Amino acid sequence: MPSRPPPRAKASRQPKSYHHGNLRPALLAAAERELAEHGIEGFSLRGVAKRAGVSHAAPAHHFADATGLLTALAALGFERFVAAQKARQTKAATDGLSQLVAAGLGYIDFARAHPALFRLMFSSDRPDHGDRTLCASAEAAMAKLVDDVRGADPQADAAGTLADRAATAWALAHGLADLLVAGRLKMVLKRPAAEQQSSLAAILRQGLAPR
Image 1 (cartoon, rainbow, N blue to C red):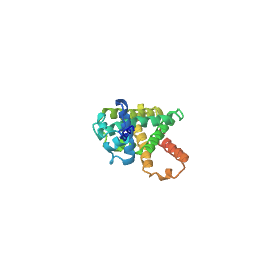
Image 2 (cartoon, rainbow, N blue to C red):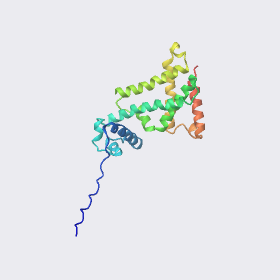
Image 3 (tube, rainbow, N blue to C red):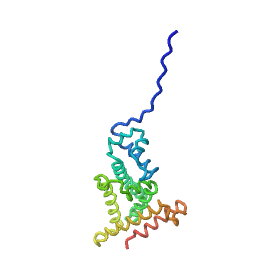
Image 4 (cartoon, one colour):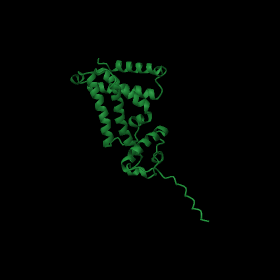
């Protein structure tokens, strides 16, 4: 009788293999999930690698340490932050004030959809805020704010109030976003979703209208 063929070896579970070009975005996506679940304090490269299905050493191909990864994630966050504002603006009236209010609503949209990332960008010392890429992304967001304020109040430049107006707009939008994420703005949060949007738009419009 012919001998039986040798039993097949059980396939070992190997980490996912990523080409050089797509490991970085995979790590960033995994980092955002790790941040959302464990917060900044519980964030670890080991946890990111596990989520991405790669070896513990794999992140070092793109990021020297957790700070480097969080810095890159914050920079990406600012790009998405601006995109959220632009998405709101495409649906708003084209006058300057309506566009500024829409940008504020986009600011809030981003914070509520990505609270952990929002805090990483604005409240954490973990990223390297001197990093050139992160600085460029943050400065682009600020430049957009200034342009939107200028569009809502064309006289602000001549009056020398543009910087103050931009600071006011930032403080108002950020304050609303932070209070909503923290669940503190009860007078708005207790309303149905559609009424929340109307209320937030009214608050922004009242606070941002040129005097």
